[in-house]
Length: 436
Image (cartoon, rainbow, N blue to C red; front, side, top):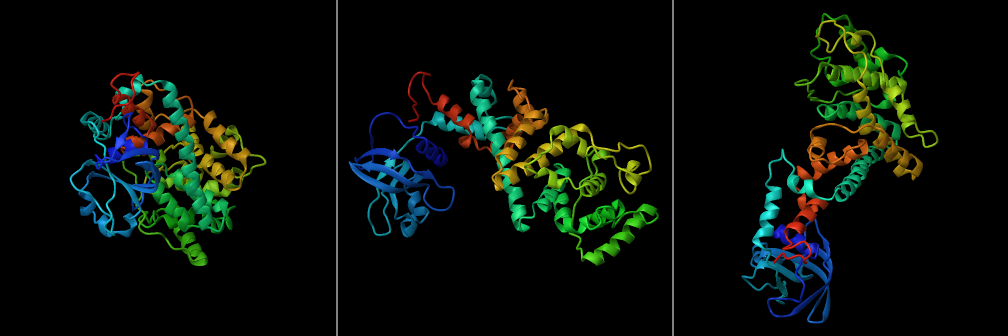
């Protein structure tokens, strides 16, 4: 209930007409304040009038007025700045630490509105909370929100890449290598791949970028996958010998433990083959091309650069222990496009944002618009309701909406959830909102 009351106050979803404190003082809202997600009062820097006198300060919301004392606010100087206490149940007057009484406003949300909120947040995670309402909602509201979330997802990833680059003294190529490696692990092995890349500096690999066998030896040795590989395999023994030499030469430390996932995966996506592919990518060194504002690669050029054939041992094996057999020597077109979506585009966007290169930012967004949409469990929740998904920019927004809002039950922070609650709270479509 307290969360719902905060929502009502934040968006001024209050009935028309005058408001009065429990003491009979008239309240006029100029600014409800900014919601506070950290410790302290619920709303900061509110601007209200109480009986004609202007007050600027903070506001606290509780289900019961007596919660003020249960939370020890009366003994906390941080709450001396409270200018209004909003409650559902007025069961006690409240005071500042100096004994001064704080005005109290009673806002009682209807049981129906509370029920509507719980109908959203208590829905099974396998179903969109607003699925029924979404079918009838004007498409412009949905597509506009999804478009906003597409950029929010891209900006969030860009911030992660920037943080990596800054931790490496702005070595953006190394940051691109780490983030690319993470994306190469896809969802199942993203963390292990990032740990492998962080423990195996690009600067070390570049010293032997012209020797594929050395690159594979270092990366496989660092991955831990060589530790239990069969000793009667000539290729494995060669890698172990090479790794022992270069581990000592570069003082490399194997990150432990790295838990690689192989269960319920197609053999072509096993981490062994992805590590061999990472070695090839490092050999070709495309990372500088991703952050080139003067000549950013086209979608076709990116696809061609990642259409890499695996050679030697990995052209016929899925793991160190599998028997020799015909294997796909390169990634599927779908996997290549996913790498571009999840790694290349965010790297471009991050570098362009950091160095104020709008051309590269626009190019990154345009690339997503040129790629066909992803088809996965997240996007299907929306497309099955008739919401069009025309490109990867849209599908990225759908993924962000489902992961960050639907699955996290952040309906109160979602435009669709906000519109649903507003709609449900109206008695008739042409009447003002009635929440009390």
